[in-house]
Image (cartoon, rainbow, N blue to C red; front, side, top):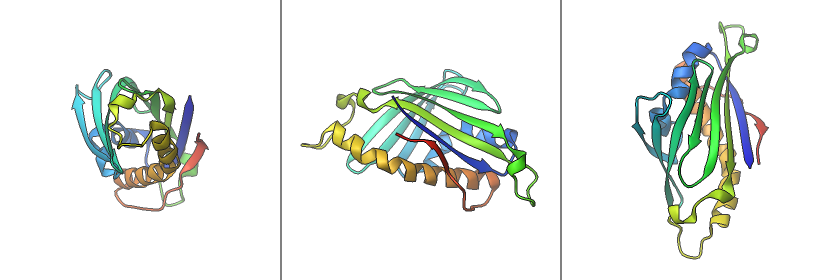
Amino acid sequence: MDRILLSTLAHRSPEEVFPYVRSFTEYPRYTDHLKEVRVNGDGGVGSVYDLELAWWKLSYTARSRVTDISAPTSLTWQLVNHLDARGEWRVEPEPESAPPDVETASRIYFEAVYDPHSANEDAISLPRLVSLDWVVRKVEPKLLNEARTVVERLVADIEGRPRDVELTVHEMP
């Protein structure tokens, strides 16, 4: 299993940050590769989100189920189709890291644990002569840049204005 653990600082309390983390339907605004999010449920535990992804000549719909919510600190999820993956969004208060002109801050963590080789090759329409292993080798290095883009756009929404954010990489494959 591979693991990605990233974090960044938002200049807001966990109570202010958590609704943004929880709002999966807004995620296409944060990344160029997530085209649409459809939800089946009320957004609570058990809700299922279809995440329509596109990159290069590939498209794929990941189906994610919310497995637990402990607002305003944690939301866990698990993919329920074609790939063994699960993860968590976690928000922890970190007021000591707030700049002098800001009242408080929270650290936002994103964690994903996945087996890239568990992907069902039939679920992804691959061009002729392209293997799933080749796709995995090409995608994994791009994950960090994609994460940086998502974090910058997410923090801009949370704080109401864009700023340079620091992405801390705790673990990458």
